[in-house]
Amino acid sequence: MNKPIYVLNGPNLNRLGKREPHIYGSTTLAEVEAMCRAAAGDNPLEFRQSNREYELVDWIHEAIDEGCAIVINPAAYSFTSIAILDALKMFPGPIIELHISNIHRREAHYHKSYVSLAATAIIAGLGAEGYPVAVRAALKLAEV
Image 1 (cartoon, rainbow, N blue to C red):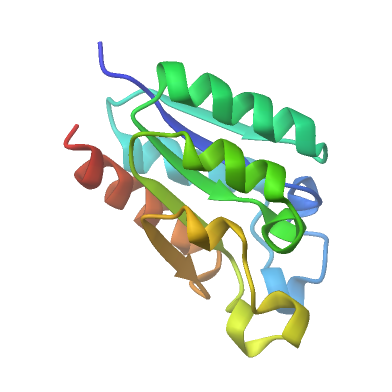
Image 2 (image 1 turned 90 degrees about the vertical axis):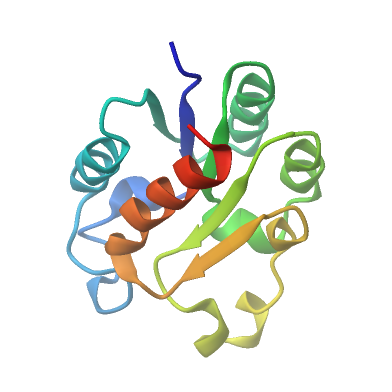
């Protein structure tokens, strides 16, 4: 059996579809999960969301031992969390950093992502459609 891709989502992403739809669109997190599972095909996928930094770090640790790739939308933690960066630096496989909006077209505090320092690739600005793109890219990079 293949190792799973971990798709990890940070704070406030549980509010997708309701939160600032002019920025994040109307797609819900449940719909994003369905898109990811379809993109993964027969490959196993762990899809998770948390508003808690420590939980994301714990899931990254789990992925170090159990996963083949990580797709992570750390949301606000992108710009604040050295703990998430340090955990990601331990992951031996591909890491795709994902942002629904184009963070570089937004306010200056969104321009420096700590996660980018560990990411293999970055996808930003494709909306929810970026998720299946990221899953397919992670599968290819992990040679699954």
